[in-house]
Image (cartoon, rainbow, N blue to C red; front, side, top):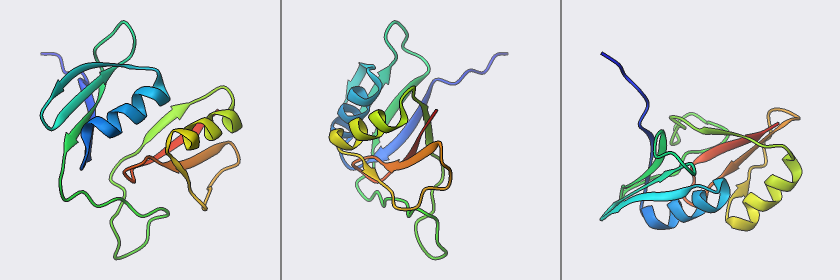
Amino acid sequence: MTTTLGAFVLGTPDPPALADFYRALLGWQEVEREPGWVRLGAPGQERPGLSFQLETDHTPATWPQQPGTQQMQAHLDLQVDDLEAETERACALGATLQEYQPQKDVRVLCDPHGHPFCLYL
């Protein structure tokens, strides 16, 4: 028996809008769209993918984590070759640079629906 990663799924109140953000950020293509669901894949491959699932009561995580608030369950680490340029581009696409940055060569941002993600060299 073989187990492989098919996709990483983010819950969101607007799957098409969040998929559009990550499609532009990653340069990936849409490979599936259904009501309440969108899946992206890297050019030339469908899997593993990044999927977006409708969650009407989605609550964004708090960064940095604090007791009594919505905790981050997972996050994406996205490797870049130019940290400053890609941080600016992500923000221009709708991401928000977070105030607290734990490392010099990593930038913590939140996507337009509040999911934390990191850009790193």
